[in-house]
Image (cartoon, rainbow, N blue to C red; front, side, top):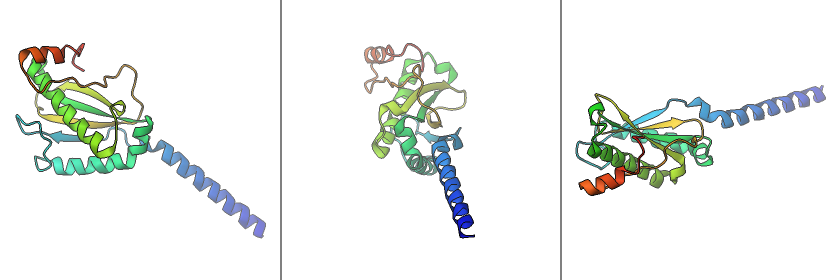
Length: 174
């Protein structure tokens, strides 16, 4: 009778171990489509916690990254930084530069706060008619693909010459 109890307990422990191992490894698949929207005041390059809905978004983002940091640092998942500009501003180098600056501000915050590096991020600029001064951080439960853009090019001195030099690094809007 005791042998049956021992075998049952061993089977339960092994089952629990396998379940928790799979759950830990598959953790990134539990969070597809998780996004956090960070807003910037018009004309400002400062990520203000008190602006708009940022306090709640930053809090959730920090908690989420703390929980998923290992997966991100190992490279089995990554964060996409998506900056938005209006459709008609797609050819406007100043608008593209501003979106790049805002994306860089968010990436710098995440790198400093969570000890991440550039290899754990991708950068995208999207056009949208109704959204500006917004950077979305999107969790992607897979590693960075070789063709994904990881670089953010911008200038803090938006003279035309500096702008042309910085934007020339993009072959197209990422």
